[in-house]
Length: 349
Image (tube, rainbow, N blue to C red; front, top):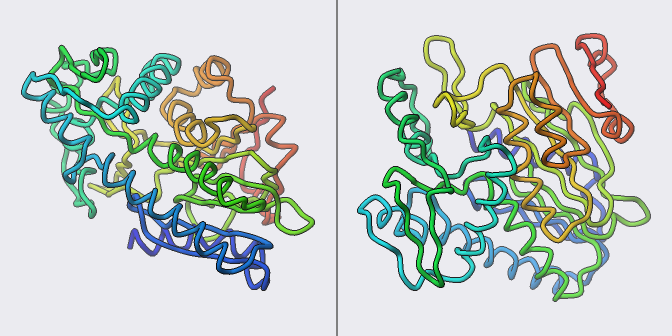
């Protein structure tokens, strides 16, 4: 079921881009627990294939290093934290990632919190298939009271330690974006001028599709088609967090994988949040991370959170309510006439 949903989401790009174009090389694979779609335009097939293989090898390396529950460099670090032991000789890349995630956690007022792996595990999201479970409020409260945060991570040279044994790092809201940024570097090394990389809804654009910008779809969170489309210029990235891919239903209540660190419960009532990121060295990371604080924040706090994180373009779908910034509304085009009729559309400054 979940694989099918991931696949349907990924083919939205093909439906909008007309992927039958003979100048387009396209590869679909399964990494990071989702569909990875790499499209390269206007290159020799061998050159495009070689570049794609290098990107996929990098994705596999990162997945094996940063996996949250299967044996990886990250799980070894988490086990040392649980035992109260320092991790010595930690690789420089992981240190850089944790330092960056730590900074983003602070800027988001801890709504983006990669240290809540114990909570994510309790809810059953540290596995490939999600089984309906009835949450125990007492267990959740105990986990919240441990106050896990990357603030408790201490880095000295190549050693990582923590004074909170309940810190369990889960980079599920960071790793795909980081992989996008790495992919851009690899394609640049291969002198690929035009490409689109999609990791389960986190997308970055290089160049354009022929004479036009790359055009992508924003998933309708309650259907298998796109609700809107927009052009993604060179260097821009886009990311969507939703309640429609990793979730289970218990007693008629939908529990998704995006958990509010302050309450310990999955966020409810928000269907999806899409953020559009202007060109930057870490545009991929930002496209992955910044949708989470907006997804978790209360409606009254969203604009303040967006300002503090410098999120200029966002698109939020709730039940019969769509909220977006004026700059985002200028960029998107709804694909179905009934969308505006059936939803209250709110535009923020």
